[in-house]
Image 1 (spheres, rainbow, N blue to C red):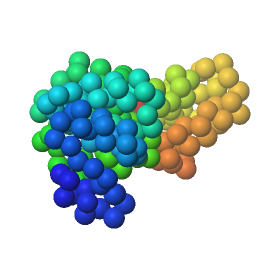
Image 2: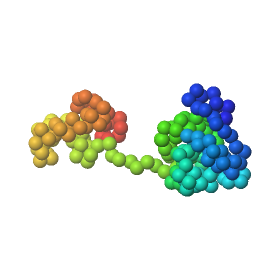
Image 3: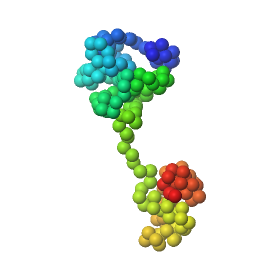
Image 4: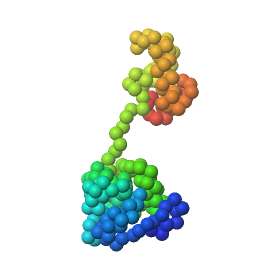
Length: 183
């Protein structure tokens, strides 16, 4: 992995360590932007090094590698401050990308770790307007059905277009169908 990191022009590998105590000493001395740590290192494990980094408010961001990625451990590592928690089986590019993302301050959440909260794409009213539009309703007809003015319906449709990345009713209905929002 060190070889792959050294080949990237955007990375400077400033140190390597065979055990957690040496890794923590090097992190304190060299202050790297990112530390790529094995969860199971001799001396101090990766979790202990992460806790020490967080406790001492060191600026180094941490990417942890583990032989097994289980939800409780992954959630705990991310909650403790890790920027990513990856399997050792991940590809070199994926690991390098995680290190680069961590350097930028991006936290990577694996689906196994904890799903990101899902916010509906459309508001309930926008979804209702889209569904009625898919049924062939015009703005005045939809407005009558929902007890809203045609102008309000048009405003909802404009919001739907923007959120779906389309520019007209037919495209909105097609995109809504593709995304499973309407039948």
